[in-house]
Each structure stands twice: as structure tokens, then as C-alpha cells.
Image (cartoon, rainbow, N blue to C red; front, top):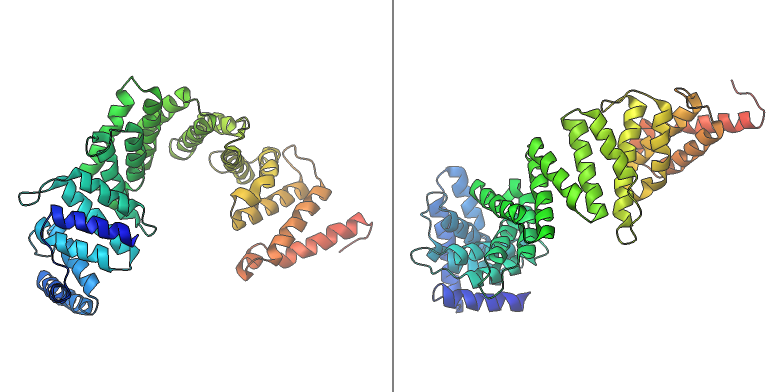
Length: 403
């Protein structure tokens, strides 16, 4: 990591501005950074915060660099002044998150340039690549970095060939985090690239993937008509059965939770449940099957999600769903599934016959889980009551009577 940082530091200094790294200059820059931070803030609270940063010169340099990069806190925007501070942070801090942020800003400076700074897309690619490899990349910075890499792969010609597959992958990652780190103008630009991929006819695979990307973004933005259109296009054309099932599940959720169109939702949930086995992605298939079964099972058990209460249908979905609960479910949902199944088989109704053996089996599984659970879970799921019911059922099975 450090060797890469030093290499990119040399690139930055040669491309942007002469920047001395001698120890005296370092001390002067630290003092200057703190001074600039104090100068930038306006309110008493901001001044107090800036004074606290003097004890950490790297943080002070980063804050000042942010101000110069963005033109914040009364500081005029200046890439030229931001560069040496960003290079200093990238090289000197052990904070991986700060390293990633500094390299992200250096990447955009190299990509856009200004009147004083020449555009250097090839070096922007280097800075973005270094940032995206960082293990501590914050979500907001990740969105910005992925957007930059997506544009550079889409444009090509900067020391690497144009690669629409790579462009698609990074732009979709950026849009997934758009709420946290992308400006509206960047979102529009990213969507324009995806729409271009969706409308071209030369690469069907890329076109189909673009439909899924556009569908996911539209769903996140609650633009459900667009989401349905793109998910349907994707599910009809993709040859990837598991990806197709994921689109079906997304459609089921939209139709049930958002549009309240129960028949269509049930149709798509059933499609998810009946996806054939896939040796390479069977864990994903089982997860989708589990999610669909649990959603329908809980809906029929409670009479929720637009479904009528029916224990027979609830058991139909929840019982096989319980086989996978340890793999794809959280502990709380596992507990609620077991107690629901035990209750239904104890009471028997809506065409579901009573079955005390099954009820006892589910209660024992529930007891075993509750033994290792928190006190709050034990209280909520009535641990003592579960144990009492187990004893009662076992005694009845032996022909004994309990009051």
C-alpha cells in the first residue's frame, strides 16, 4: 500500500505542482494547514473545532484540503492549493479512510482539471484505482470513486481500452450508493451511460444487464413503473436463471408491498420458489426460495401483506422454509418461525389438522435456541411457557393428565 502511495505521490507532484517533501517544509505545511483551517471557519464553534485539529496536523491538512477542493467555509475553490495537502495526507496518514478520501479528490482534480491544472485522465484512473482498493473505503467515497472509474472505463483512451462491462459494473456500484455520495448531476450522467447501454443493439448481454441496473435504481427511487418495466425486460431476456429469479423477487416485492397487486405478487413469489437447482449458485437460489416462502408463510399466518389468514397455507410455506432458516435467517425470525409452526399444529384450523408430534418437535427446537438466547428473547418468546408446554405434551403422550 505504501509503495503504491509513493508512486502516485510522484505522479501527483510532477503532474500538478512542484512540491517539496523536506522536513522543514513539512513542519511549515502543518502549521499552515492549521492556520488555513482556522481562517476558513466562521462561527465560534467552528473555530473551537479547528483549534482542536491543530494537535493532529494530518486531520487539519485534510479539512483544509476539503475546503479548497469544494470551495467551502468561506474558502475559494482552488485545486492548486488542495493538491499538496491531499498528497501529504495520502502519504503520511495511517488512516486508510483518509487515504481513500485524499486519493478520490486527487482523482477528480486530475479528471477535470481547471485553469491552472491540466487534465490528466490517466492519472485520475490511478488515483481512483488506489482508492477503490482501500479496505476502509467509506460508502460515500466509494460512490464517488466508482463513478469516476465507471466514466474512465466508458471513455477509454487514457492508457486503457474502453470496456463497457467494467463501466457498467462500476456505475451500478456508484448508483447503489448514490444517496450517500453522488451529486444530482453525477447521477444523471451515470443514468445516461446506463440508458445508452440499454438502448444499444450490438451487445445483448450488456443491454440486459443495463435493464437490471436501471430497474434497481428506479426501485430505490420509488419509481415503480420504470422499475417494473426494466425488471420485466431483464427477466424475459436474461439466460441467467438465478439473476432472473432475483428480478422476479424484486417484482413480487413491488407488486405486493408497493402497488398492492396481490395476484401478480403471488405469481412472482411462486416463480422464485420453483427456480430449478443451479450447481454454481444454489445458495442464492435457496436464499430466494427461503425469502419468498417466509414472506408468504408469515402473510398467511398473520393475515398480513394483503393475504387472508389461513393456517394450512401458512404451514405449506413456513414448514419447508424452516429447513433453511439457519442458513438465511436471523435468530429472531428463526424463533418466530418455530413458535408460529408449533402454535398452528397445536390448534389446527383452516384445513390444517392438529399434529401434536410436529408441534412438540418445533417446540423442542425453539427451546434449544432459547437456551442460548438473550434474556429479552426468553421473555418475549415465553421460555418458561415453552418448557411447560413441552412437559405437558410429553406427559400427555405418555398417557398422563396435566391440569
